[in-house]
Image (cartoon, each protein chain N blue to C red):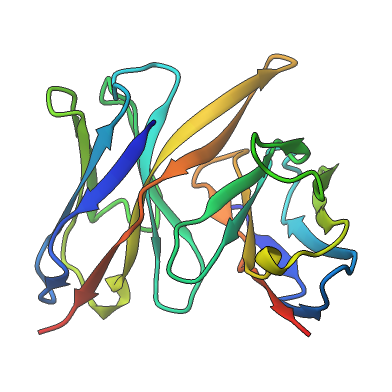
Length: 107
Length: 126
């Protein structure tokens, strides 16, 4: 299985901050990388597919980049509703695997 | 608007079989553009992909669970289901069903899970 490792596991930040989360794959996954946001008690919500494609309805302050083994999710200016847990997920090969999550908390 | 709804028992005894159903509404499950799958999340932990299935019945499994998992589809009811046998406390989790869609770009298909059910909590306990 492809292992996905996110860093940091948790992060405290303030509204308006520019923040970057990193996801690393254990092997080359090209651009087969998705990002999800999950709020407590809710299902994950797809933000970005294919490493950098912003999904419909997702605010433009979110952006994704990377290819190969290293990927990032960037928030240009954090908003109160962005405080949540974020997961990366590879779709290069089955079984699909997720990172362990990055919990973004308010400072 | 496409919606997915999980259903099943909230409590299952150890060694028994967990059976869950996902009902799809707002669109037909019989589309070759998508497939359908299950993901679970133990309390306070991350996400684990379990299995997926096309309406035709072609299925995919996580090898870590394959010996205990069966996924199947009922197109007449617009539903797909999951059976997980010989459950233990480690199978306690929120179970989600999700649509797997894809975009094509440069002869490649990029899959993602774009529509999720709200999840159903399953506890394994005697």
